[in-house]
Length: 271
Image (cartoon, rainbow, N blue to C red):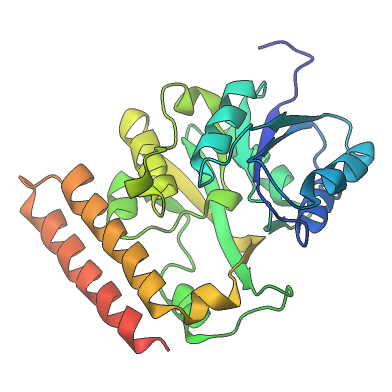
């Protein structure tokens, strides 16, 4: 890698995020770590998102905007285009409505330099459309199940998805031959598939910070839409079983089965 190249490439898939993208980009400007480049891939936005990006670009030293001629229907293709354009040793993903805490990159780069893990993520603060912290049963369950997870393996991710893509810093070498699946059938779980494949092809080890380093936005509509949550969960379970579970290993399969049944029950209990 060129010595003058940024160490971290930040990939942002953008689509009609005029209400959030300024806050997202400013959270990068305010990072305590500065050796990065920003790659914004616009998925044919029809609002003022690009105008806002161009305005904030004056505060960013190294930003590239890649336009898509047509909308792909999801973030998979923009993320893949961002990976292709990345020059850094590490790649970070940040959705256009999410926000990083100021020390996010600094802490994660430090961990990556000291370890051989494939990637590092963190816990999240869930916020609503207006940026208010969500204190629902959903966030309480997130706290109870996995709040202290630090060292994880592929088997952990197969049983429960504790990876928030906007929180991840990954080695570019680990995703050299891995891309987000752009097929419509995997639209809700393309990120989960991606991280499973990354771990399957590399060391199989990742870290999750026990502290919250990202604000993850959940729209009010998606929180109240039980049908939408069920469809997403059902796809996740099917992908989990048929794509990655080793059916010759009865104990992990049984464990995954029981856990996913609990997930289904929790779906209907959370209202």
